[in-house]
Length: 482
Ligand code: NAD
Ligand code: UDX
Image (cartoon, rainbow, N blue to C red):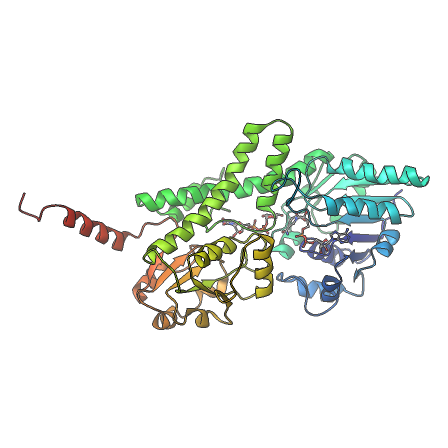
């Protein structure tokens, strides 16, 4: 039998933290140790100022920490004492070498394998929680068994794949009531151990068991399908702008078909987040590795459409502001890649702000949860230079609007709906523009105040027709003279 009362998770990030906190909450009979080599992160997990913002997380950590949930930098001890080890480390896109810009960088996963090989004193179940390319379990198995052979000791490692489907901003609710839990493995006993843990709160019919490769691949495919819906509706949003259709109405009509469903059909400035782009690029790379060029090209289009969306959205802003934003103050509402998170990894706000600043704009950002240091770090990660006199963080939306030419909404934070836009309008330059990159505000109401509103996927009927009329009249003979 496999002993199971101690769990260790390597990697205390957006996935490791919330996932393990939930296991600790639901399984008081288990002890959960989360270890990470990042000292600052661990000390914040042990403080009142958690390193990630996630609604509901603080309460659960408070309830379990010091009882059956522990955060530490002592990886060795965590590995030694655990029966089950989750690997929840980052698997970013490679930034150099073979597969640069597409392949997943597996150095952290590999280092976890080597750490386990080094410190494991007995048989253990090793679980891939990170999102990994198909066949990674085989690589981990090789690292473990090669080291075992070299040291002459005989230990048994069972490798399982258990990808995580939580979304940021709703992680605790997603973990509490997952649509499904996915477990891939070869050994039925090892699979059974993990099933029994989840069964403490997840109905058994929602726990899907597959072979290792189906499980690893399903995670990439799920993200590719979700992102594809966003790119699909975004591509349609532009057709709407040209034709007089309204993308919100199209989404509603299309999503009402139960075969399609209503979720993930909101047109936006583009999808962001640490997962979608990385996982699709990884899928593209894997297709190419297996000689499937057309299949890879098909999925690459989802990412290309997303880049296109960010560029056209920003071009529209510059164009509307009389083709230049040089020295103009622009109020940017939201920098996080979605609401209810402080995470800025791959946020569409990065490219939008970069393009505006390259055109000379002074960008004033207000985001309820994002720290300027994290935003600057993301620019750096993407090798983008920031002139700090052009990139300012405001402490309130009102401050960002003072003297601004335009408001640009980039994250769908609930509080943005509740503002007194009349007040903002009175402080702005005229004409006062508003570009809603999330299609979330009351556009008719804003127009009434006096804003020139640019929504996504909806032509500006009133003014543009007026403008067109004017152009047409100017270009033709006066009425009644033909
Ligand atoms: P993250 O960067 O927030 O956290 C990873 C942590 O692992 C970091 O704190 C890092 O210091 C630590 N780490 C790396 N190597 C280590 C080692 N050898 N020893 C100890 N600690 C080490 O990443 P994340 O967002 O939690 O994502 C983790 C994985 O989960 C990725 O593969 C990601 O694709 C996947 N995933 C993420 C999400 C999400 O919403 N963020 C959702 C589902 C799946
Ligand atoms: C995603 C997956 O949803 C999750 O299952 C997986 O485990 C990790 O990756 P996450 O990136 O946290 O989660 O957020 P998600 O809610 O999927 O949103 C991703 C991006 O798409 C965000 O930028 C969001 O604003 C955007 N989006 C989403 C849209 O633009 N329109 C939509 O209709 C839905």
